Each structure stands twice: as structure tokens, then as C-alpha cells.
Amino acid sequence: MNWLMRQYWLHHLEGSPYRYLFEKTTPNEYVSLDCETTSLDPNQAELVTIAATKILNNRIILSQPFEVHLRPPTSLNEDSIKIHQIRHQDLHDGITEKEALQQLLAFIGHRTLVGYHIRYDKKILDIACRKHLGFPLPYKHVEVSQLYQDKLAKQLPNAYIDLSLDSICKHLELPIQDNHDALQDAISAGLIFIRLMNGDLPPLRSQ
Image (cartoon, rainbow, N blue to C red; front, side, top):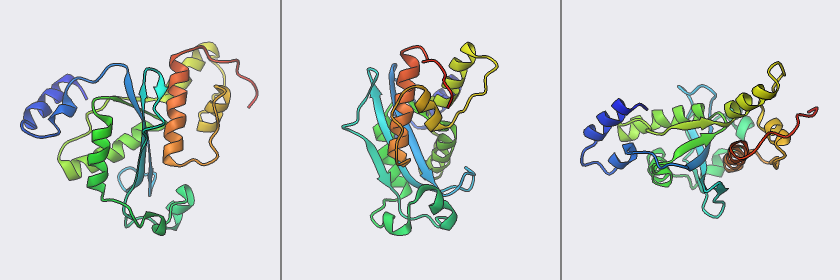
């Protein structure tokens, strides 16, 4: 979101408890985020789970994760269950989409978002935020796969680059998660971000 739009929302949300979100981003603090949804189409997808971790001083704060399950959305069907393995009965204690957004915004604060396919997650959340709260998400974001691709392309400009999450983790010598749920993927994206921001790439070996 550019400066002009931030000024618009700062004025438009005068008196709102959410006005602070459009103030200046906290430097060098990030939130790694991942969502599970019912579709790969952001205009049709509904949120199933949201997870996030804070990244402070180049450390992932694992002791204070954010993770919520939502009430089963109407579009949760057999096809989407095959992707994330989350069934209707797994969401019996889920909260509403509005409650999930309110908790998430409080967790993120002024921080920049980090993630793997973060543009997709951000668009889903942006649509939901406009629907329930009346304003768009204000956050800047960093796509870790793009960060990885740009860094590797400088070393090997003509190489084929596998941008799958597991492949990136393997090359960067990071743990590969057994279960790709929202929280584990958020942690993986956070580890990739820290690794790329604080060191050279290891040699690229055969995957």
C-alpha cells in the first residue's frame, strides 16, 4: 500500500481501533504467515486455518505462535480436504472469520508479512478483511520464493530453479517438515527468510 492510500485510510478510520494499522511499519520486525483454504482461486477460496509466527532480531518466536481454526466453510469439500487434510469434524471448535481476522491483526501489529506464496494468502485475507471490517490489509510483504530465486539467479543465471518449499529448504540446509500444515509452513517460510537475509547460499547440488 502506497503512502497516499495509507493517508486516505488514516483519515477514513479516524476514531477506529484499527487506525493504528495504517501507521508506519515497524522496521526489522516480521510475521511469517500461512493459510489453509478451500480453493486455489482467491476469489472463491474460504479460510480454514490461519497460522503465523513473529520474527524478531532474526529469531522466530516459536514460544508464541498464532494458530486458529475457523468454522467449517460452506465450500469445504472432498477436493479441498485432499489438499490440507482438514475435515469438518476437525473444525468443531472453530471461530468465525471475523474473530480470526481480529485476532490476526492484533498479532501482526505494524509488522511486514513474510511467506511462501504470500501474495495468495494476503489476497484471501484482504478480501475477508474488506468484507468484515471495511478496509484492506495495509501490510507490506516479502515472498520468500522470489527472494530465493533472485539470489540464486545472480549466482547461476541460466540454471533451472526448483521453487517448491521442500526443495528450497533442502538447498538451504533447513529442516523439511513432515506435515505441511499452516503453522509448519509459516515456520519454514520464516526460516528461509532468515537464512536468505543473513548469509550466502550453499552450493547447489543435485536435488
